[in-house]
Length: 183
View 1 (cartoon, rainbow, N blue to C red):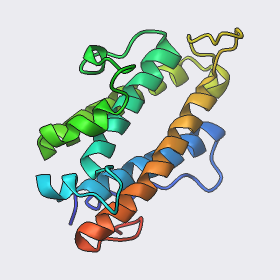
View 2: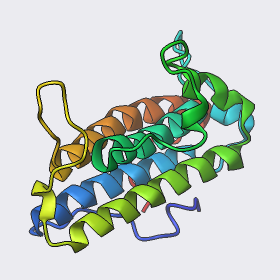
View 3: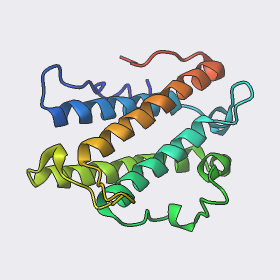
View 4: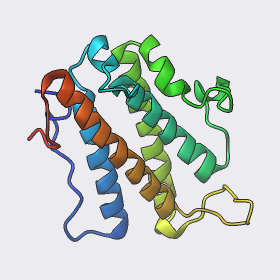
């Protein structure tokens, strides 16, 4: 049994609040990524499919960066912390994918889990104020717009959904694991 299967599979509420539905959808995507990357050694996390250079380890590292950067930059209005603040993203936009092969499976999983935990804490704090999903983040666009919490969370759900599809294909090519719910 994988680490994700050991816990109850997250499912958005059938008739919950908007916040519960959005957060439930995000947690389901996170759980699917955790399941698709669980139980694999370094070779499994480095496997590619066809001509693509995307790996499961690269997806873990990329999504850890997305978790941290979305909430640091868009919500809090601060730069993302380590290790993201040491990267020259303009000259190496694929850094997370490229350098994942240098990390151990446990380092990749820990990086991703800790990033997701930081995101959960930021969202929990934001929602505890009673402002709901309409609260505006600190980031200001060139046109003066600011994203609300809803938009940031929905962008994260979209990012995960796309990459969980990649993870499904790559994992199937590694050992035949398919599906989206280990239960």
